[in-house]
Length: 84
Image 1 (cartoon, rainbow, N blue to C red):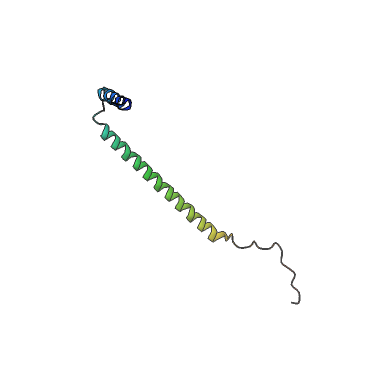
Image 2 (cartoon, rainbow, N blue to C red):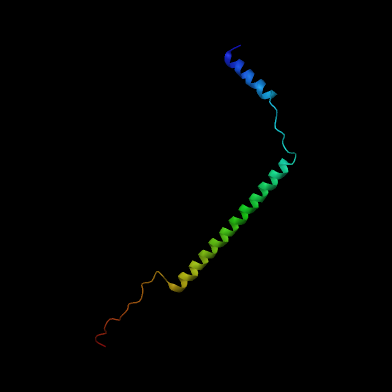
């Protein structure tokens, strides 16, 4: 028997004899509930951010349609009219 195989067998024996931790019987139920709660929260936050983003876009479009920021501002004075 090689040294590596002997070490593997010893490790396997130690792991098999080790006491296994006690797992609560309702662990699956609690984990499932927690995961579902996290998913609901994330879904709600995602919806809130979509609503906020949509409102920002609508507000920008309303502002842009009223102010017309793409047009040049009116001149402060009018040029003299000649030949009229």
